[in-house]
Length: 295
Image (cartoon, rainbow, N blue to C red):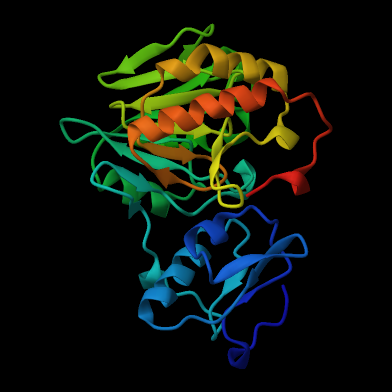
């Protein structure tokens, strides 16, 4: 770990893997330079300090450090409410490439978890205190690392698509084919092969779209994008999936595994998704290149 000195203020050390999590949580304070996150400026006031504290607690490599080098547990804001229904788990895991995960409130006081944060008994107890977690919904193989442990601890059903079943062979529920499936009241799984063979997005209440790594909100383009340079299975399959699925999707919140979140009117989201479908149709296979992603 790099030398973190009090007089230097907030710092990002060299372990950063450029996962983008910190830049989502502290925009304007943390940016990108030289293939990793850097502190752009020191915080001005308590509100900006809280943004940096959230980024530090979410960082999967624990690379973000306050001026005294010690991150206090009482500054942890997670799970962080995005609205009255969805919470951002934070505590992103290196074993899921730093992916975001979410908690979704359901009628009757239960919750569903979409993908997972890093595993710890302390975090699991924190989620248990919010109410019964009935289901762990995995969007694809890259985010499966802690699914079984959370499912067992929380007494939840673990879901994955058959295309990625080898990443969670002990899943309790297996989605098959490409037809949408209502897995609970108001929650529909839409298989979306492309990023991986078994990628799935989950639509809740025609308001929330948990898109995994299939598409995300890009700050650099101010639009919905696919990570064409990090498509493990097939960009052509992803194009076909979007063409088959886009018109079925109605949502206001885009909540991806990687990349930024966005809340827009449903009609605008629908139009942007149609435009994305057309742009993706023109894409061709290319080598995997993490550095080419337009965050």
